[in-house]
Length: 103
Image 1 (cartoon, rainbow, N blue to C red):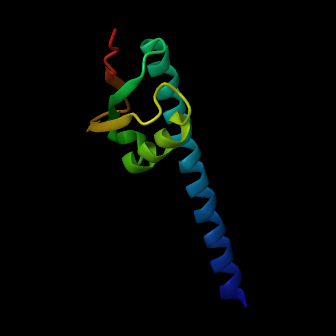
Image 2 (image 1 turned 90 degrees about the horizontal axis):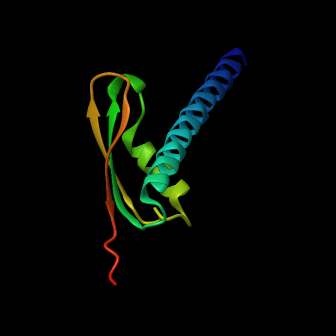
């Protein structure tokens, strides 16, 4: 009986940590979308290139998933997020690739 209680508590802690990590990635993705949208000024965006510091302990694949979720219905809908890793704690938007508007 005691072992089951410990396993349940351990599983609960793991789930809580996973939720906290997911919220962090969602928050970062939303900040990226907000900044990229402001700079795109309504123009459709094809790709966002970012550099992410390793010491932030962010999972790039989770950040990409979060980005896909928060871009839905925005000017960045369907845009690719390209993540490069670097030393430090930075989160930098390196480039925006915009759709070419034909006139």
